[in-house]
Image 1 (cartoon, rainbow, N blue to C red):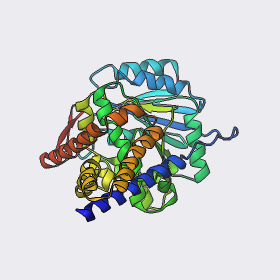
Image 2 (image 1 turned 180 degrees about the horizontal axis):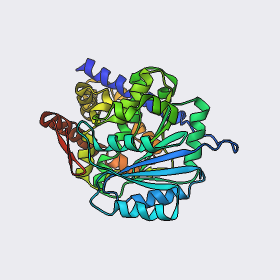
Image 3 (image 1 turned 135 degrees about the vertical axis):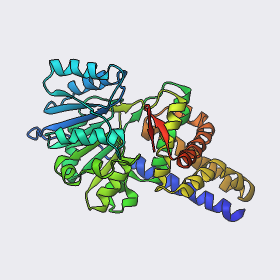
Image 4 (image 1 turned 60 degrees about the vertical axis):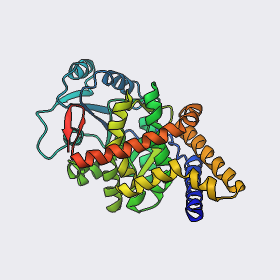
Length: 363
């Protein structure tokens, strides 16, 4: 029991160190030179996104960066997604709608949509955005400048997450808790190891030449967590990448309900742990039940230090992620329980070898 308690204490201290690194090294976006104005292809795969797509297209029109083409891939939507995109294309020649002819065997829907968009894109840079993302200000100019500054093949951002229901507050913060307490994001850029790779498909900016050479969405056409797989693949091939947390200029509402969030996170939670179910379970046990051996076996001064570290971790992650601090503190225990639900659901999906997402069965 004493050994377990010390392991948990040391692991928590390491977590705090990682979070501190993420708080200190925020990797701000630099200004873009006025004489640098390459064409940026903004590529949006969309399936039944009538609630989101108009807002994103308007955001794009209001961006400071105007040398763009915007291609939207309508992935067999059954709502008004295509009509909304067509209304923008009629008034802005930079916008274009591509319609799917059907999903080929061996492909997942989003991966196929991204691949088809890239085949039509003409830009020097490819920016893949999910339809539920919101952007403002100079986010495109800043990320292009960041790619130029570090000669990146890929830059990805974890947007600020907008949450409006208790179901979202219970689920969505777990993503940032795992990410920011396990991976110093600055190491994604500075270290060559594929284990230090991270990306988020909501915002992925590629150097177009690198993308065309590697064809990552074709390579990972049937991968459910293609964003992380692509980041690891690029690192393995010596391509420089970076991953950042977002600010007020990029946000997203990932899920509208508790059940949607559980289904969504269960498809990728294991990948946060190097695709190791064992590491995922150990992380959950340590961060959820680790207080028990610590309280039983360690002196009071270390118990106090341990509890202080837990609270500090939650506070810093909330600040870095631009999330509600009070809610994250009050819901810390329920959030940990929900993380366990993610992992259990991931095991169930694996045993069934399939799950439902946006009306499709994904195996």
